[in-house]
Amino acid sequence: MLDAELIEKLKAKNKRTISKLITKVEASEGEEKELLDNIYKLGGNSYRIGITGPPGAGKSTLTNQLTKLLIAQGKTVGIIAVDPTSPFTGGALLGDRVRMTEIGLHENVYIRSMATRGSLGGLSKKAIDASDVLDAAGYDFIIFETVGVGQSELDIAKTSDTTVVVLVPESGDSIQAMKAGLMEIADFFVVNKSDRPGADSAVMALKSILQLNRQTDGDWRIEILQTVASQNQGVKEVLDEIFKHKNYLEESGALTGRRIRNNKIRVKNIVENELRIEMWNDMRENYLSNEAPKVVERALSPFILAESLIENYKSENG
Ligand SMILES: Nc1nc2c(ncn2[C@@H]2O[C@H](COP(=O)(O)OP(=O)(O)O)[C@@H](O)[C@H]2O)c(=O)[nH]1
Ligand SMILES: [Mg+2]
Image 1 (cartoon, rainbow, N blue to C red):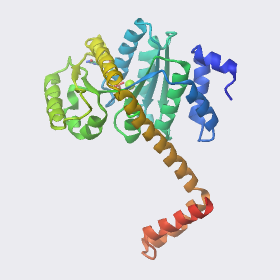
Image 2: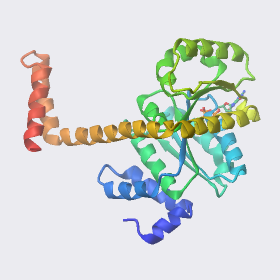
Image 3: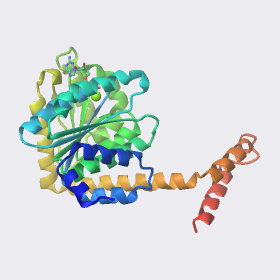
């Protein structure tokens, strides 16, 4: 599957080879386990950074600026931009591409955009699998840009070593709404577009939420940084904070713990996904469709129907 020549090209960060492999990984529906397994074994040296936040917060702009700083330090960077925007806002995707083209041409940078295009819950799995290809290629850093709204995006954030949540002054209200999910994943916050009015009060609002939800992630203190990414203001500080967090994780030994936790989530997701596919074969799907009206008529309860489906699955799978 992965012959020596291909591995050599991959290790040389040949972009065509990487693209082809990611396409293969993206297309795989579980039957390409051998490929995924071989790719996984080649990796292990990348540091994963998640940049998440609402649409338009400036995640791509920030990612672009951070990447410029990293390549100036001689680092290699792989970027996976996960954009679940519907066809209605397809323009945003195009915007990302244009903005990132410049760094994308650099030999030490590889950029891949992934859109949902109906792949529903499978997107996070595909993005994570794709990051294994970049890891195998030997990129020093992998940056996931995700829109922090759905479970799938939170899943990706949970596989990162450092997660940065980007908000804007206008996010005031949504900070409240999103706080549960975001608090769970943020290693630090960035209030971007701090050139706009309301930046200070957004920082204040965030601070008070942070104090209410005192996180106990060891001795790590969750900071709030301010940036104007479009003018490259405060970006160096964001990179410093990423490195500070990386050092903290490495020196405290928390990095291994975090990666174990992340991989448990990953394995559980793979297991649940495969079980779901095996469970809902045509036969059981048809059976469900035929029996469902009886549930509505109360001739059958959902519990009994579920049980008979599980029993059928079990009898088939020993
Ligand atoms: N005023 C202002 N605009 C910004 C700033 N950062 C990014 N933008 C603009 O905000 C828009 C959305 O940025 P983008 O990076 O695509 O956001 P994303 O959807 O989070 O990736 C673009 O037009 C950027 O030029 C900033 O700090 N201040
Ligand atoms: Mg973007």
